[in-house]
Image 1 (spheres, rainbow, N blue to C red):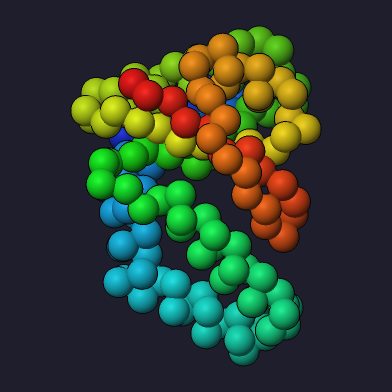
Image 2 (spheres, helix red, strand yellow; image 1 turned 90 degrees about the vertical axis):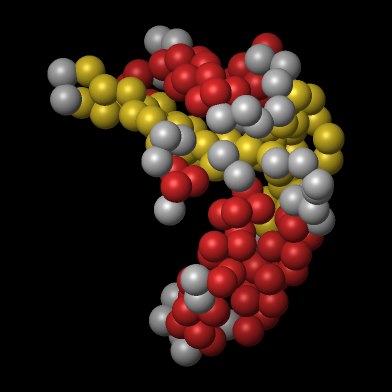
Length: 156
């Protein structure tokens, strides 16, 4: 899937992974491919068979969360999304997360995309501080099985 080719970056030092970032350059394309490739239906079928160890109530919550999430994805413009960023705890505070974020933003800008979205836990103060420093602004909130999320957007 082209969405991750240039958008998956890893911070390495002496063959040791310090962190990574995953940027989706087109969230609509990502969801469309997931839907029409049958991936979502395969996951749903496995969930209903009990393979994941969750029941109908949990499946209902997941579907409800994804439908709520999709309301933020309906747009006429191409929007990128920071799907995941992480730095190994032993390397926190060394600027690795900032460098990964800068590389991710550079990639999205290179792709000609004007808007990027991310979701972050409200209690993740260090991430919130970095995102705000880089111009992300809160535009909404979401909730999933693990708790609350802040939805942030940056215009490039």
